[in-house]
View (cartoon, one colour):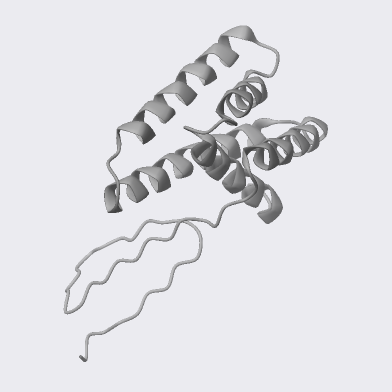
Length: 146
């Protein structure tokens, strides 16, 4: 399990990928993240480049407004998870080096962005045998008596 600082670095990295897509910073950020995921193996680097390109295509295809924000949040979350998985499988010495590279890529993309937030309002809803899945800070408020 990753410690909080590594999770924050992974989250910032996911946001940086989304932020850089469609900007002048994209090519450098794209190549940097591909190297990070490739870890010296050409086939892994190529697979990361293809995923990054698909991410950019998905982001560009999203319409403006709420849909675009949902797509951006979903893509940032996907990359955060991939980065967490990468960090978790690395030996400690490699993990430190990758976190330094990750922070440099976040800065190159334009700095850290706030973590996207999702708000769900379930007024007068009844749930039986339910589960709520999410990540980050979550607040649940019961408005049953209203």
